[in-house]
Amino acid sequence: MNFNIIKNWKYNDLAIWLKSVTVQECSLYDWKSRIDLEPNKLRRIFCAFANTNGGLIFFGVNNNKKITGVKEDIELKTKINRIVNNNILPPVPINNWDISAIEIPKKKLVVYIVYVLPSLYLEKPHVTEYRIYIRGNGENQPLNDGSQIRRLFLVEKFQPDHINQLKNELNKIKNCRFHPDQIDFMYLKQMKEYLESRITNNKKFGELSNSLARIIESYEKIRRNQTESETKGESLTVLDSESLIEQVNNLEKELNNFYNRFKEIHNL
Image 1 (cartoon, rainbow, N blue to C red):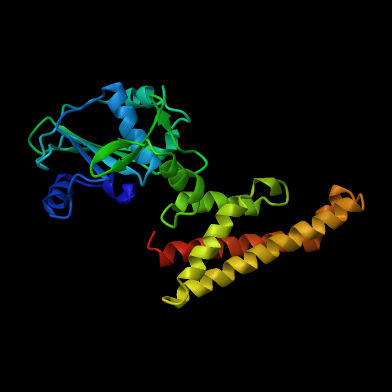
Image 2: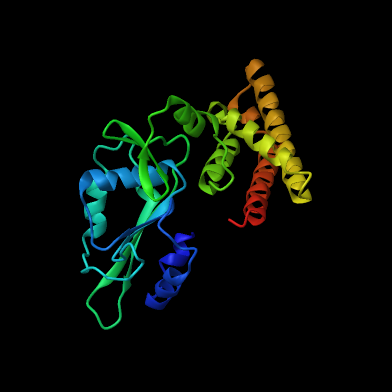
C-alpha cells in the first residue's frame, strides 16, 4: 500500500478500509490496541518488515480490527527512532519508515500508522538479537535454515515490486563514467531474465527488454571509449569530449524512460 495515500487518510477512510474482508493481520499488517514500544518486539517487527516486503503497524486498532485509539504522543517518532537505531545491524535507514496520525472524532484519541518500507538488498538482511527475522502469517519469524537465507538474501537480488531498489541500480548506471565498479551486473542479469520470461504473455515486457538492451549497449560503448582514451593517456578534457557527453545524456534519457515505463507497466 502506498504510504502517500495513507498519510492523507481521515477517520472514515480508515474505518471503511478496516471493514473489508480482505484486510486481515498478515505479512503486511500488524494490529496493536495500545502503543507497544517494548524494544525487542519493535526491533523484530521493523527487521521483519524491512527484510521482507514492508508493512504497516497500527497503534490503536485491536486484533478484531476495531478502532480503539491511543493517546496522542508528539514524541512517538523520536521514541521509535531511538529504539530501532540500537541493536539492529545494519540499521534500518531513517528514510525507510514514517508515521502518520489519524484523529478519532469526538475523542481525544488517535490511531498511529507506522509504515516500514522493504530495504534494498544491499541493506539487508537486518539482524537483531543475533537473528534474522522475516514476516509471514502475521508473525515475525526467525530464520534458522541457511538455505532460506541464501534464497532470500543472496540469490534473488531483483524483485520487481522493489521500485526504490530499481531506481538505485539505474542511478549507478547513470554514474558509470565515474563509478563503473559500483554497477551490480548480477542484479541486471536477473532483471533481464525476468523481462524475457514475460515477453510471451505481454508485449509490453518486450519493449522493456529492448530498452534494457539499448541501455547495456550504451553503457558498454561509453566504457569502451573511456578505456581507449585512458589507455592512450589522454586528459580528462578529452574524456569529456562532446561525443562522450552526448552518449552519457542519451543513456540518461533511456534510463529515465525505462524507469517510468517499468513503473507504469507494474502499476507502481
